Image (cartoon, rainbow over all chains, first blue to last red; front, top):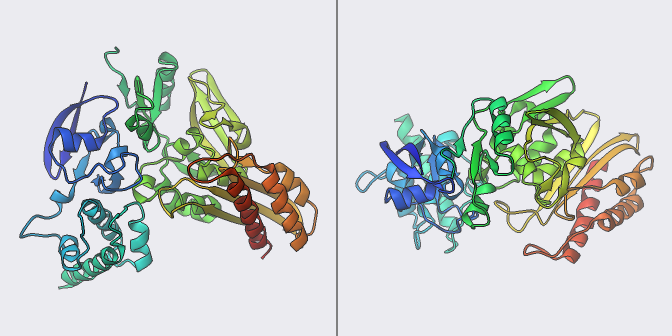
Length: 159
Length: 282
């Protein structure tokens, strides 16, 4: 076993991992943070998407040891009940959530986009979410929600 | 059991030392997007891991007429590089179609090549561009032409103590036409059913120089030499394009898999080659 130190949603953790351990196993099994989902475990579905040092990654494909010293953000790190992130609020208001399994990954993929490109086109939103599958196929509402959040966030910034 | 089997060396010399010391046991990891799929599926369990993200292989630079790309450069870095967008637009186009943003943020060019999937999309573009690869070990370095690098599915000429250090690609020039297309089952996070890349230099309407590469239709990414020979020195008219597409399909050795049948791959290959040759002719 090897020690790994990482920060998750602002809190520091030290865990012991094996060479084969991935970041998703660390988050879910060792830290009890279960918002990143185990969908395919092969990088196809995006349900385990998290931000690693601000960049979108698939936690299932991220070797835990290569996350040493890095900062992880999961959906819990961007908002909470009563203080929802504009993306969370927009997903709620636009009915962009059906079963909810893909939602944490979708919102983090959308956040990674808006952090770099606050005013995306519809095609840019689709491209940014292209690695995230919604098997309820609620894509239209998801895209609407991201576009609405972008507008909302642009508005907040100019005020 | 080794006391320590995880390393993140600060330079390439140390990587080579470790590869020599742990020959046959060591796996190199950069983005891990191929390696971890195998690990998660329990197809392999690494005995020794060498992380190469900190060893200085993250550079993109121009040297004379070539663009040099360190093996640990990520796909996102490639498509965001002004130098690549200007000098290697075909590579940028191919890399944009690889994986999805989350994969491209960590997956590396070297990893895509060393993993040696017949469907590696960067390989198709790099073969058409005439890239060569620099391989390094404790005992020195050697340069291998792109088309000599791949041996079979998952197999390359890399020896157990060698690492792919750098990809060298002749800069594309204004007087060359190019076209690239990836056919997949979805737009993102999918392995190609067929991909094709072509680079052509015309003398008027005559094909003066051409490189055509096709992915996912043979045990390795394929440089379609017979098709190139057929087209060379001729006027690229409709009849020649048809014949070229047929020849390219005959050159392939596709197989049935979960993504497509061999029959479909041949048909799609002919259609793609026809489309690309039509595009470069203008």
